[in-house]
Image (cartoon, rainbow, N blue to C red; front, top):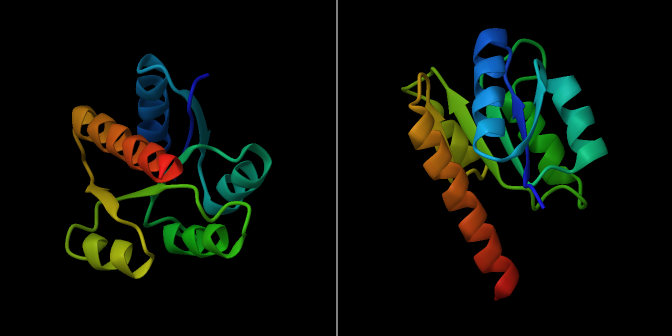
Length: 128
């Protein structure tokens, strides 16, 4: 069964490019251009992984993470945060309890490696 990944990013072009890339890599990829739509998709589809932008208008990535972590049925979903905010992404990710983050622009291979690492860690936790 294909792993389902939700990508939330307000940069439409980047969102479309990464969704194509995720599908090419064999994932079931969903996308949202803002936090509220993304959270609705999370609740409806319970993806295996969430990749989200830190900086979005309205409901930003941090807000989405807080909502996910408060919901017992969603809080175990791994999250990768991405941002062009090179100086603050690490501190933000740590404050949100996210171990994995990437700065924009990121190389597709780096994203794939991080996705694979997240899934490997999830499988390890499930088997122990």
